[in-house]
Amino acid sequence: METIREIARKAKEAASVLAGLSSEAKNRFLLHLAEKLLERKQEILEANALDLERGKASGMKQALLDRLALNEKRIEAMASGLRDIAALPDPVGEVIDGARRPNGLLVTRVRVPLGVVAIVYEARPNVTIDSVGLCLKAGNAVVLRGSSSALSSNRALVKIVHEVLRRCDIPEDCVGLIESESHEDVKVLLALREYIDVAIPRGGADLIRTVIENSRVPVIETGVGNCHVYVDDAADLDMAERIVINAKTQRPSVCNACETLLVHRSIAPVFLPRIVRALQEKGVEVRGCEETQRIVPGVVPATEEDWYTEYLDLIIAVRVVGSLDEAIRHINTYGSHHSDAIVTLNYAHALEFLNRVDSAAVFVNASTRFTDGGEFGMGAEIGISTQKLHARGPMGLRELTTWKFVVYGSGQIRE
Image (tube, rainbow, N blue to C red; front, side):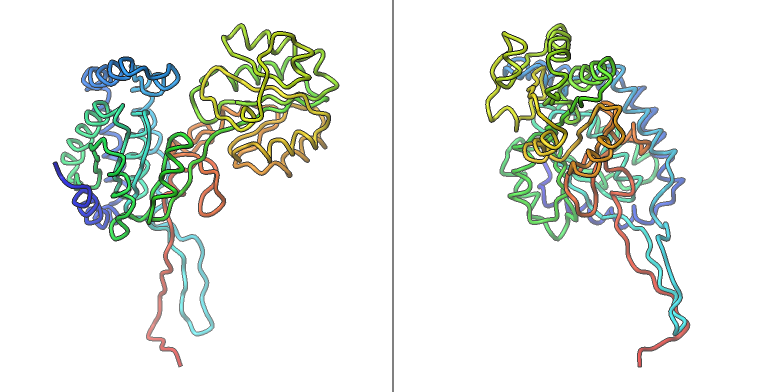
């Protein structure tokens, strides 16, 4: 088995070839890979079944098993995502801006690939294909380090990727897979400053923290999703119920699912009984503050820790607040700056929420589940950044590039 250093070194060499590939060549690869995923569907599902069997035997939680699982629909979605990426404009080579100086120099800023991107992620095999598609379209090589729980799936997917790369005459070393199951090897990867240009973690809080604390290369932090829905005193309660149910239950194991519901005190006696009942009918465990418990007896008492928690499961924390200001302060204090929503028909309240909530995505009268590269028209995403430098929110092709200054002269020298 190749060493991590060797995989990273070869990716660095391949990155210089990728940087010069035409859009046509990159799109041809993406479309061919989409076809092959569908053709080799059974092979992928058989590999995934091995991962699921191991996960069940080890006692993996149902929410994580859902993330790990592939089926025909999810493979078709991966193929569709690749076709969407192929249809997007190629950001590489875009002239961002430029100006001619008094001495005649033409100074331009041109979009270029980041280089080699290391993706460290947990049990979601679809991330393998999303990462390959986005990184290569943006001209980057990629080194993948998925979790051991998805190793069989990732091996099968990368095998197909390598076959398609060879067929398209693109260096297969531009996609590397680290198959080691040792956590120490993640630290080895994150120390390779001479080969890795940026690391992107995708997963839970522990994984993200590990990458940030151990990396010697720049990290784009894709954040934990402790997302909120605040139901204002001016909310349409039918709309609020639909949004809360969707945000919590449509797919609870993902980072843009709602984890905390905030309800204005003036509507709580009417809204809380109906929303708690609707949530419980969907199998959701409701944990409430003292006021919530008084209004809806039988709700599980919430602790201080609940307000900070990303459950990734059919659990929600509920709190009654006395004002819009209190709701905003709660979100900015306990939230993870990912995605937060207000349900209201009051324009002034909506505007204040949008201006003051410090999150990567804020919504008015819509589910937090829309924080997604595909839903935002960006194609598949590499992750959702909750930091403020370089990229924030869903990260698509442009966020996988940087720029360099390209200067045109006619013999000028500096006096």
